[in-house]
Amino acid sequence: MKEDGRKARILIVTSGPACRNPRAFKEATALAAADYDVTLLTIFETESDSSEDSRLLAATSVRRIELRSGRGLKSLFSRLGTWCARKAVRFTPWSPPASLGPAGRLLEASRQVAADLTIVHTEIAFWVGSFLLAEGRLVAADFEDWHSEDLLPEAQKSRPIKLIRRLEAEMLRKACYSSTTSEAMAGELALAYSAPRPFVLSNSFPLQAAVGPRWAREPEMVWFSQTIGPGRGLEEFLAAWAKTKPLVGRLTLFGRPIPGYEDDLLAGLDDAFRSRISVAGPVPPDSLPGRLQEFDLGLALEPRHPRNKDLTISNKILQYLNAGLAVISTPTKGQLEVLGNAPGAGHGLDFQAGEASAELGRILGDAAGLRAAQAAARKAAEGCYCWEKEAPKLQSLVSRSLEGSR
Image (tube, rainbow, N blue to C red; front, side, top):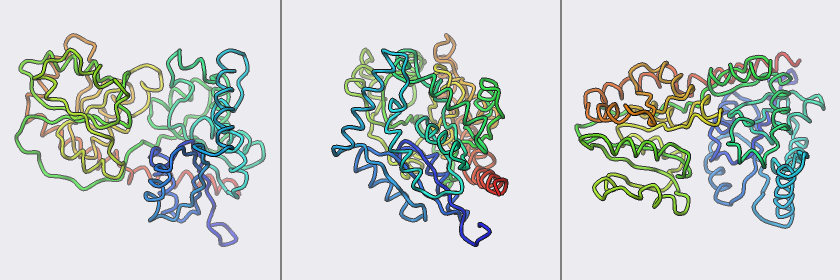
């Protein structure tokens, strides 16, 4: 509450809808629950995204402002400007802000919202934050990813990496606070930019109702994403799983396959193996916790390149802990950080190593071990990795920043 009796006003700026940005959604609702006046400024492309955001936020006091990028003449020119700007980045030394998306429109919309604190997410919002800082506004920055280290070399050619790095450095050094997803990420960001270490707010979720022990059965595995495609570790996992003797378990993939990818993924597998793999559509965020509890073991398969993937903690592994699933993850620094804080909940396996198949077979064949891992996973969620533990940290950061600005 401000000295004049009104609620402190928080503006959250991000580049996508809340339904596909759970971190910004949780931030907005946690601050609204702490009696702040919260506005969430987003960009969206489809009416279905807008409808889903309306549904998710209907029971909250969060105010929404949406920049529509999907239709209309203004949107057409905006998308054309972004396309041209990215071509300029690829073929010239120029790094126009429009290559990040509708940067000018987002800045204009941000300036129109009176806010005591603005929290920026993603590169385009960092660009907005840079201007707001120069104009004397109080700005915080959330590094939900290390954006300049989140692309493979070919993809970097169309992204203004120098501009993004400058924005990252400015946010880390000048924002009233910065936050990120893991201790590993916080340490590397501070080192890379000679900046204060960001506060760590994990991507954990509200604690869901626990389920009892799983019944005796062949282990059911699950993996989920919005998109099913290459570079997500599925190929390496299937190759290792196919070599296990005896072959046990079933796998369900939740997500929308890139056209042709499902056939490529399953090509060459014999019919008996293919029958163990099911591909289903994406699951709405609020339905996902319940669906995950239908399974025994969750796959958190993240590549170690680019650098961001190695350092962050994926939503997957935290959702699995919450649902009480045993975990198999690839040994990225972020995932191993979680397993170190959740002893007994899972295993980090390098599926490109020769011994991975034998270890995977042992895990899948050990019913008692899986039940123990499920209990350990749930214990870790209750004691460490749940939003009930993270929300007070966020609320404290915001409170201290507003107090310090008086």
